[in-house]
Amino acid sequence: MSQTPREDFRAAAHTAADLVADYLGAVASRPVWQPTDDAAREHLLTAPLPAAGRPLEELLSAIGSEVMPYPMGNGHPRFFGWVNSAPAPAGVLATLAASAMNPSSAGGDHADVHLERTVVRWIAELVGFPHEPGAGILTSGTSMATVLCLAAARNRAAQRAGWDVREDGLAGMPPLVAYVTGETHSCVRKAAELLGLGSRRLRTVPTDADGHLDVAELRKAVAADRAEGLLPFLVAASAGTVNTGAVDPLDAVADLCGEEGLWLHVDGAYGAFGVLDPAIAHRYSGMERADSLALDPHKWLGVPVDCGCALVRDAAGLRATFSLVPPYLRDEEAGGLGWFSEYGMEQTRPFRSLKVWATIAHRGRDGVAADIARCTALARHLGQLVEDDPELELVAPVETSIVAFRHRAPGLPDAEADAVNRDLPLAVQRRGRAFVTGTVLGGREALRACLLNAATTEEDLAVLLDEVRAAAAGLVTQRHG
Ligand SMILES: *Cc1c(COP(=O)(O)O)cnc(C)c1O
Image 1 (cartoon, helix red, strand yellow):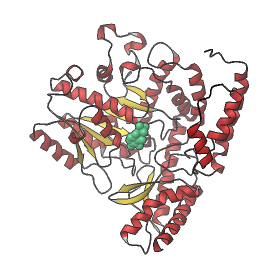
Image 2 (spheres, rainbow, N blue to C red):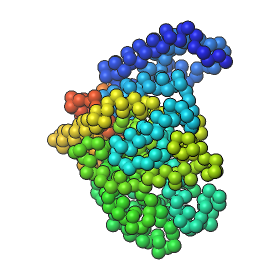
Image 3 (tube, rainbow, N blue to C red):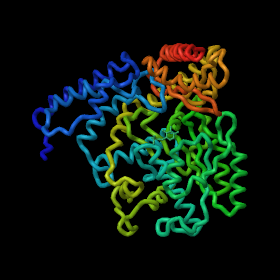
Image 4 (tube, rainbow, N blue to C red):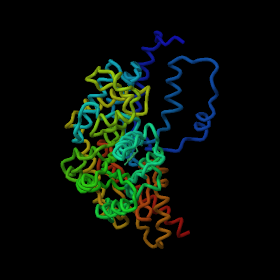
């Protein structure tokens, strides 16, 4: 198959540029989200395999009319759902160039590989994590970064116990125990299960009322497990939980991990970049003491999906976990760091670093920090609006840029009010003017608004609350029958 662009490529590329610029330019004036209409959904689902090809211009027009009208909604300044950001325009452009080069960033001497070393160093510097060359890698997201970090932690613990997991597996080894909280993201459990640790050996440590890991309880749990002959090896703390944005007391957790010889893993997928806001940076104290930090440039930084990152303290340990290159054959190019494929699961790896480079380089450190600070300020403002509103209540303090709140549903018994709050996110979404998602906190249904978009205005926040009140009024009326 010939892949050399024909002369029609340049014209189509210009059309594509216009299509994308028009799309991004119009996002804010469209509904945030709307259900895919039935005919369009059917068309997307049942498209037959085409026997004959079509010209590029025709494909672009199909993308414009059949695909782009049905976005997820992130990108709109009134999208507050989950943890999905608007794409950074510089990152969007870089994606095109990266795919034109289309390297495998597994390793070697080409620009993408060198650029990845640099953007990993930049990410570490942005979040204040100590960095030695080689001690980090871009991944598909934090879920994969967590697998890498926990694998390195597991292998270190096994080695200390005189065990070679890579040769012998886990069977017969004293059972390893890891510590999480009820607010820990499910990717930690997925990784623990995948790595053969067993979710039964994942201890859920109690939290305080606002969802922070309780260090005294952690200390007790570790002691109890040691007394049973088990091998505590890892604590997974959060630098911004997905439910409320709570940051665990990282310094105190790091102290305990130091005393007990435990690996401290910090999940900063959503929240790590919050440390760039001087107003909340103090909450992150201790993050820089972690053995590993997983974070997502594709969240708060706005790097187009996908891009996660694993940062580790010990580059050699991560390499020893994954490398299949015998030490005597290890490539001494690039300062002896070898290939990225020796530090993780992926062999053929996409050119993620260019969109990270572009996203950060476009705003600069100061611009990135200003965007982060704007989001946290907007979140505090939204929190204040909620507190001042007799119909609404905050269900957690606003620590980073997530606001968790409820509608009081006056006049309804608790269970009914809970049902209203459960149904509220979809009711708000369907109205098309704002997008918010829900969660369960302390057994109660709640809404959570995650602010990641520096283009959001205070007026947008007022619209969000108007929409919540209006949608709730509809639901309450229905319940009153
Ligand atoms: C999004 C998220 C994850 C999972 O990361 P992916 O990039 O979706 O794999 C883990 N932890 C937290 C706190 C998150 O917000």
